[in-house]
Amino acid sequence: MRSSKVVHVVSAHAEGEVGDVIVGGVAPPPGDTLWDQRRWIAEDGTLRAFVLNEPRGGVFRHVNLLVPPKHPEAAAAFIVMEPADTPPMSGSNAICVATVLLETGIVEMRAPVTEMVLEAPGGLIRVRAECRAGKAERIAVGNVPAFVHRMAVPLEVEGVGTLTVDTAWGGDSFVVVDLDALGVTLEREAARELAALGVRITAAADAQMPFVHPERPDWTHHSFCLFAGAVTREGHALRARSVVAIRPGKIDRSPTGTAVSARMALLHARGEMGAGDVFTGVSIIGSTFEGRLLGPAQMGDLPAIRPEIAGRAWITGTHQHMLDPDDPWPGGYRLSDTWPGG
Image 1 (cartoon, rainbow, N blue to C red):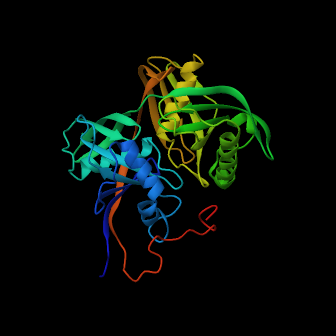
Image 2 (cartoon, rainbow, N blue to C red):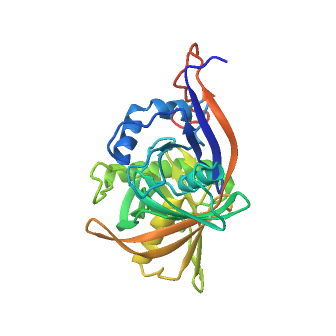
Image 3 (tube, helix red, strand yellow):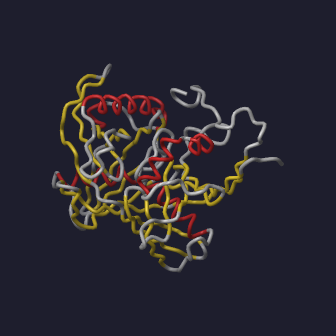
């Protein structure tokens, strides 16, 4: 077999959402910080195209690049590549990365609990993995601080009208819509409709009220639309279904760890969630992440929370992605039959 490159990948998913991990064959990108390396990968685009575009990828795929950490506390670092973004943090991808690190032996597994620090472009995350018989059975991620950006603001969406939305940060930027106000369903049959509508809402938010991050002035867009279902409570247990639409037009199969974090920041700001409460986010396929408040935090001049999210991941295979030097599509391709806007 001829190949001008070989990229070694361990494939995984966290509660249904694909989060593959590149474990070899790619040199670390230039940059003094993980944020700089994230930006370089986003702007260069070569690696993103190789692993995300067809014939190796698809709009459903997220891919994480392992890189040496910059922070002395971190055991490893990772950069997330999503279909349209190279985000600061991702909960489902962090859970996949932690699972791959432990189950492949890159980081030593210690039963019954392995603790480690990982570094993402958005900051350090602290991982607690419940382990048994060589399996990382459950991963809890102490996420970067989450905060509320705007609450109950009007947003004009063409073809929909005026919506009342919130915006928040959970490691990535969200525009949050009350699902009941839209009158749409969270059933699987509505996935295509929700994906298209979510992208329209995200674009409207970007045009009318750019996101402002107090410590990252170059981050001015909303990555996702979170369709937030009604919260039920039994004692300290809160629960809600939700759907996150990911650009250019797909639905997260997992409950989205950064969305659970952003939702908890909103619930806390409204006085609806406090210490000792557990929030369970339920995805469109019925999978769950559990969220807890670890304590208060600060993001610039904004009050924030320290969220923890917990869920499971499973390794699905290993791959060696290759490039024949005569392949006429070295960067792959996208078509709009499966890739919206492709």
